[in-house]
Length: 129
Image (cartoon, rainbow, N blue to C red; front, side, top):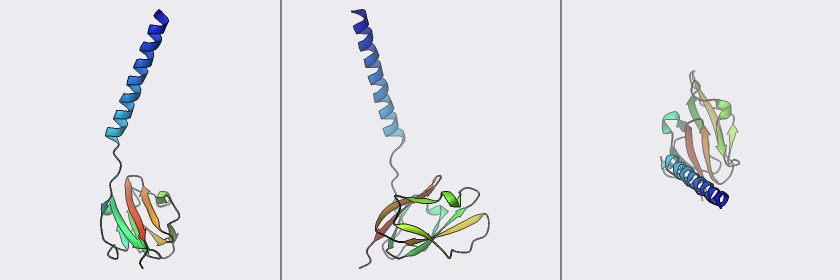
């Protein structure tokens, strides 16, 4: 009987640990809430570092640039997930080092999170008609 009691004690302890881990994750990593920065047709064509945590709404075929500090962020790691609604484009805004600019063109509908490290913005694409 002692082994059954020991097994039950271990199961109870494991259950409490799992509940604790779930509670910790749920309360220390809340989902990111993006505050709307602009309305349809009024969003800036240059998204800057200080706009971190905001939502931008663009129509299909719009073009916009993202300008970030190269000492803090890496141009190659700037990415929008899930993909396929914006693509990198040529012709960027001219900036002085240590800043860099990346141009994007909207190619589809939906939403993605454009991020690099602790910088992230929500890109929402709408039908202009």
